[in-house]
Image (cartoon, rainbow, N blue to C red):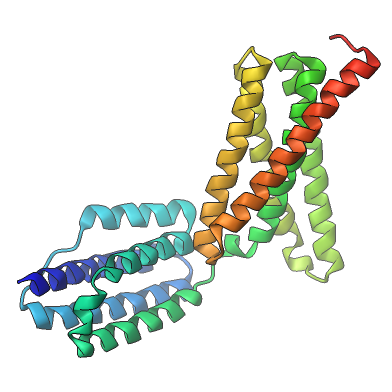
Length: 286
């Protein structure tokens, strides 16, 4: 009975996967990706039949969960949603490894089909993932430069409106500069067909980061609390972005998160001290 329940759990997972991949293959406009997703749906249907032959019953998919994954794919991209799904499946199946060891014919079939599905997932082409490097450039530069600038301005000016104004001017000017530099860099490397989009991704990532970091200074009167919320926003942005990239690109989350967070906070702390020093040395009172 215990093994039967485990196989039913596997079977339900496969039925859900068939529903997810099938729906995605029908709504994705890119024909290349649509065909790959349809093939994966077929693979998952094979998984389902494998377990059905063992349980002898039909099961329904988790429709609500499938709907959530499809919506996630629409918002954050196919690759992120599907790799997150695959990681969840791997974690769930890891606990049933001992049971599958008792059924080598099932284990071999599942491992072979899972390997094939991973190869198919690797063939999916998603435009915005091709420009992750440009997004990282814009995001990282905005975090490092603006957290440092805002920290320095906070104790130099001690006025949230003035700090917000200075931060916005600095941030917008820097975003245009970074976007143009990314454009020229791609042109110089002979990637003229990608230059405009790379510049756009860099600029958008920079601008969004600027807005989120400056927002506390527009909403709060206390410059100390505004700085605290800006630092918290910076950490949250780094955390969310690195989680997204680590899943979509299969890279280490911890390593890249600590690198970006350490760099941003380190520069902010240094600029904080410079702001105090400059204020005292120049005797500026605003």
